[in-house]
Image (cartoon, rainbow, N blue to C red):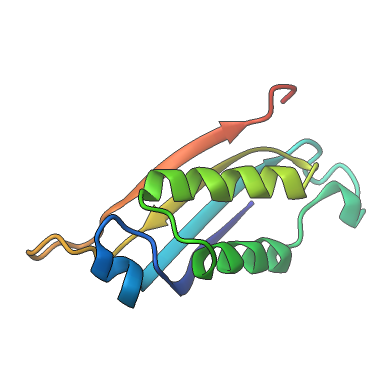
Length: 117
């Protein structure tokens, strides 16, 4: 399952201006379930809206200096919140990063798996 392009304004970054003014962040989440399509029961899956709400709250919430740390926080929160998720991949895009030149995108992706998955 996946939800891509979750966008909100956050204040993550190393530079003071990034933390003061903030910028756009875009997050993609792919997740694998323990029992995909095994039943038609909502307890065996994950609601897209719930993923969206958690990710947006984290984007606009506590600022992190490194997007690597931010991505790890998203992954941890989603695994804590949804027991049906066996593994997930989180990508954080920072398309307006203060690099000082033209670029299409910059970001980080990380994969997490439960120990029992």
